[in-house]
Image (cartoon, rainbow, N blue to C red):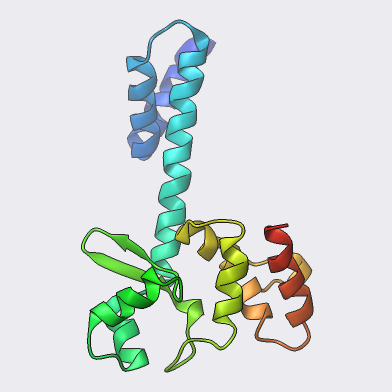
Length: 170
């Protein structure tokens, strides 16, 4: 079988197994053939959309709804929770008709005591709730494979985690 036929066969097989790959192929086929920068732009946009989608899924996996926050904190109305968010006292993001709050901001029935400091330091770096959540939850080797959020709760790693968070906005 000629090399081109082998390649075509492999591409067809991958497109059958991987809908995202098939979609990318369609976008590339629809893209202008010249200049080359257009093809690179199409591929870059697709990659950015995939990355953002993964970050959004991760954000939602680690978040709780307004209703759950309301229940945990003992507030009578969802408006009270949204007011905390508007004042910058909680990190949250509205997606569709729901607002989601990263769960690391809470202890069992209250806001974690160091949250005001955390949110102040995060705000020096980003106003994006998804980026802030990612910063707080990504596991780091230099924190014994824990996240900044977890490390701030442990005496052994609190100082290092606080320094990392402080360095973000510097």
